[in-house]
Amino acid sequence: MDYYVGLDVSLRTVAVCVIDTDGKLIFERSVACEIEDIAHCLRDLSKPVMQIGFEAGAMSQHLFFGLRLPSRVDQGSFDERVRPLIEADPDLSHALLPLLDARAVLYRTYRELDRRVKQTASHDETCLRFMAIPGVGPIAALTFRAAVDDPSRFTSSRTVAAHFGLTPRRYQSGEMDNPGRISKAGDPDVRATLYSAANAMMMRSVASSEIKSWGLRLMRRKGRRRAVVAVARKLAVIMHRMWADGTEFRHEPLKGAI
Image (tube, rainbow, N blue to C red; front, side):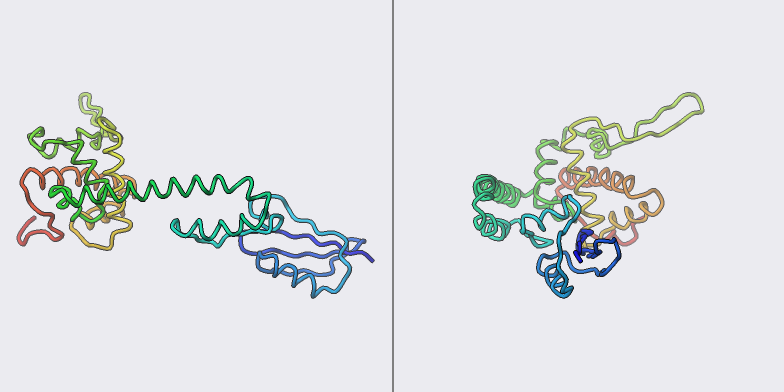
């Protein structure tokens, strides 16, 4: 009697199902989604398998090409992990090695640009003060400094957030007063950078600060997106005030402050 194998492929496991010519279920097992584990499972079956079938899709490609990367590969080690796999197959080498070489050039260029940005920020006194704020990195510091250029352009720090479109639009008519979404006026790159810095402060930074605590309290009441926008608005005000006064960022409020 002949036997047929069906593989139901998922991200990490494969459901192995074996039936005979009459469609009767003979064997069923779940194994790791690796070629060696599947082959070992079928060898344990000890029956003449006529055909093996599995669904087509992104998760089953490695079962046909026979190549699979680890679940996580760092950017710096990507080339050394992938290149030997590609070079072992002449067809893949012809198609993918040029792409891998291009990626290597782009990655080296990215690393050099990243080094220059960090070096530029580390040599600027104003950027160094900005980077003392949790979540504010070299790109955020340099972007804000370049966009504002001269802190004396703004008579009040509160107007900086409005200049970059981080204050809500309002519709007012008679007794009606409806605040809407942020205006999105001004430079969108600066606004996006301030939003990213606020998100990093609240979601990734382990350093505590009064503004982060305020943002987390607001997030519980208003939701994550509104809270991050509010913190980004606060960051614009705080960074301008630090620049204008030449002061440092304080992680904790002053004693007696309200």
